[in-house]
Length: 565
Figure 1 (cartoon, helix red, strand yellow):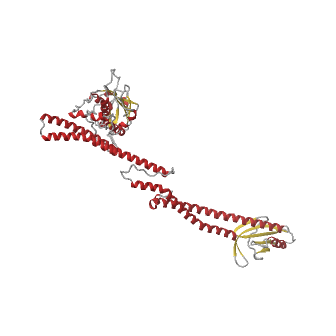
Figure 2 (tube, rainbow, N blue to C red):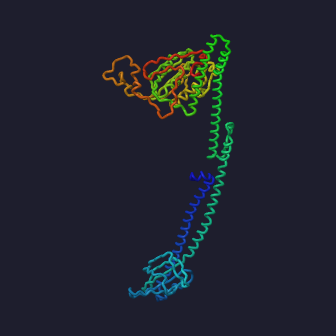
């Protein structure tokens, strides 16, 4: 594997070539050393076998006593078997009668002095002694490295010592020749490997370079172009496909951004045009006081509508920039749903609420906006009825908002959560909707680890189902009554027809709110016209705040973008 510091300094091609050359060099060095060692050992083994065979033949010939005398046996054995050749042979006869005064005489020899033994080895009968790299001086004064084999024998009852020394000159010559060719060939192989790897790496990186050049030429106006995809289905091919998929996502994102800007500009143009026309009318001074009062009322309505639209756009912009970071506090979903029961709607369709106590952790204002957007959307399309239910299913809090309107087609159920999407564009614009309501619902629920889905209502129409992680129920709220101070009551439980809802949950003062102190939280969110829900009295029915209904409400006084279908 190429070191990172090497790749950053000399590039991928050169780094790959150097790495391949280094690997080949190490492999050839290890292989060459092993080859030289094995060849040397093999040649030494052959020389040893040959010397042992020759020494064994000489010992047998001397022992056979063909000539009747020890000296003649030794002489004729050497003369017959080892007269020629480069081997150094001596046969010594031990005439010692007194162990303290040994008399050992060279009786047969070749290629060396006939009077001086070449070694002081005295092997016993049939014993073999081998010495490697044994240096012998020749009669001409030169020295030679040999492999010496000394074998013991006997003739006519006298000890005989046979010395056979075979020169290692041929072994050294073969080893030196092999080493020479390795020293010449290994660098050439390393160089060839480096050059070949450099060229092959360049060929392999050509598609990558083509992709780089194509991407470098792209601008924000050329996102429709694609990089070339090589025919090989390898890593480079997958890189090109991934790059094209990324360009497609960028193109889609750019298209969404442009459509968002265009739609936002279109939505802002209408109230701004109304405000400009009203101001121009009042500036002329030709209108009556009654007309001016009506104009001011209309301008206030358009200003409120413009403010709501800008607020919705800012919320979505925050979601795109860094994601929504809602405040973390205990929120009673049933209180939020109950507030929709008494909040008037433009369509005149009342909201029927069936809620059981369910508490979640999140941003009260953002969650209230979710419920309000869904209820406003249902009211715009309902014929006679809007039903809001809140319940707990296992560890989830479930909010369902249904109507008896035309419903949402199956093919459009995922598209309606996109921004500025209206399935009935003419009706939505006449009602004042901007197509942002369900987009805000989706973003807020994603920030709260929740989800939203669309289904068919039991009686016809659309049913929006919201799921959020429910807050854990305190132990004393599961079955034990709570006294006025929030503690457990002692004694028997009084028989009452129903337990007030505030007894089922502890007072908020007993359980401190859960907050992310280290997170950059979004500013508090107050949905337009949403009655304030008191956190200090979760069991008290909230009093709805009066909802303004200016003249501009006829153009849409509800939550911006709440009309989707």
